[in-house]
Length: 47
Image 1: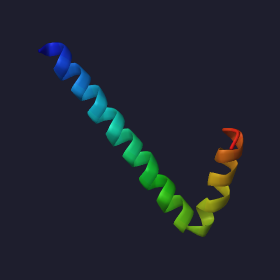
Image 2 (image 1 turned 30 degrees about the horizontal axis):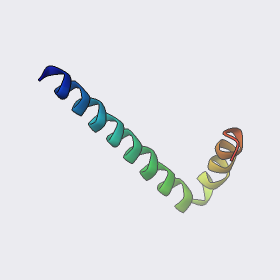
Image 3 (image 1 turned 90 degrees about the horizontal axis):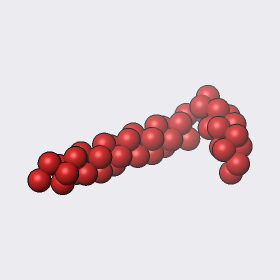
């Protein structure tokens, strides 16, 4: 049972982290000052 709890904790943590990144990205695209920074980050990642 402990393994199942650990897997659930990992999934919840990953889901929360992904949600936070997506929300920050959305906020970044809505503010003009952050738009350049997000384009730079995307180009560094190869997108």
